[in-house]
Image 1 (spheres, rainbow, N blue to C red):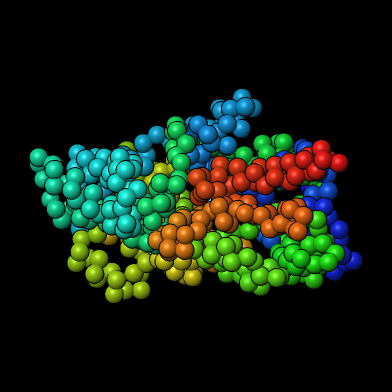
Image 2 (cartoon, rainbow, N blue to C red; image 1 turned 120 degrees about the horizontal axis):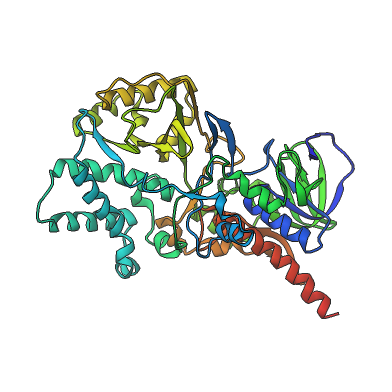
Length: 488
């Protein structure tokens, strides 16, 4: 596989189209262009691997996905419909009700009755989708209206559950919901986050069996294994090539300077750089500065942080009939935890089983505590997680034989996981549409284009949204030259 990693400074290389980033949006854009006859296409990838936030690795009995894990929905979902078109839907299967039939364990080791958990879960996950009209006119945050609606529904119940337990459940449920929103708190999330997002109908948690999400990259590249053969993009991807800055109005074209010192001059650039990286470095990354509307979008949208833990045990974790469990903190235990160096465990909301991995438990952590966790050593994190499990469980908890965790925020090539719309986004009156707008020359030719999940107005935070955005920008270029040829 021709993955160039050389850092030797050479004479400036001329390329017609440079795509920055080899995640699903970058791969989608580049393969679409190549199939349309654009042969002079080059992907520059800062990491040492292809895939971006699709990151499948061998672990335990098969593989795990450190990044994207599920195909969310079926109708109007680019991932699902690609598989459908290729008659490959057998690559997916439902995850079932793993994330809805969980147990709730309190920090005093009490287990909340299943009927109580079931009723509270039903209320929690129906309050937002069923109130779309109210959301449109609501002036506050998603957290505020969620709290208001939840307690209204609780007060309607003919048989009132223990209010203390309900409060504990609600706090944990909000953290679980944050793993979908990628926010630090629901009180920073705008209601527009729900109103703008279009859920693809169908099963929301379709897993990739024992193959992992990187299977989708093979389909885009039209290869059996992109790690040995890049298919459509053979000789067109260079890894370990981190871009330092882009002079997008240079007299010779678009001048791209890499940290290695290498210079590339291009006619077009499709930038699929993570929103987190753009937020951190757009002022030095683009020369001259970006238009104010673009800067507002970069600063107004947010890239949140969600991380995973994977614990491999010698035998399936007991009780074996539990598909997952959430942690409910008693008030006094939570206050005590916050005074310790393990305060970050507050945002570890639960652990769940993984399809085709019988000896694995997967945990989740969200928000600012997820970012803090990344700064700790793997040993410190594992010791804290084992303390957490043993605090909540009456049964003996064995030591795992293998452990790994994700660190998306501290990776300078990502700075987070996926995007959301906050109250600040609304205040700036910006959104994905401003981030997606291309930079044009005086003749209307696209010079720098933007793709990636954060540029998708309706499917942000998803692989299918990222893929759609890559196709969108490829089509923009294809149509520009098609129309240009017709006017000659």
